Image (cartoon, rainbow, N blue to C red):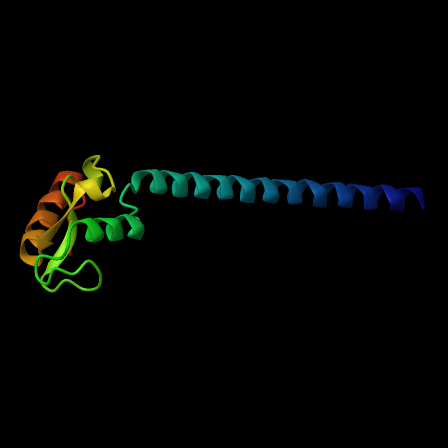
Amino acid sequence: MGRRMSNLRRRVRIIRCSWARECAALWAAAVRALAVLAAARADAKEQRDPHKRAACVTKQPCPANGKTRGACPGYVVDHIKPLCAGGADHPSNMRWQTKGEAKKKDREERRLCGKEKTF
C-alpha cells in the first residue's frame, strides 16, 4: 500500500508541475498579448472622438448647405495637424475640407506618418 501511495503522489506532483508550466506559458503569452495591445493603443493616437467632431460641426457649419447637423455633401471634417504628427483631436484642430483635397492630404499624411499603403 505504501508503494502505491508514493507512485500516486509522484504522478500528482508531475501533473501539478506540467500544469504549472503550461499555466505559466499561457500567462506569459497573455501578458505579451496585452503589452502588444497597449502599445498599439498608445500608438493609435488616431482614436477619434465622435463628440469632438460633432462639436466642430456645430461651431463651423457645412460650407455646402450651412447646416450644423447631418451630411455635408462634397465635404469632410479633417484635422489641420494630423493626429499621427501630434495634432489634437479637438475642434480647434478640425476644419471642413473638400473630398478631393482630403484625398491628397491623406496621401501626404500616410507618407509623413509611415503608413504608406502597399497593395
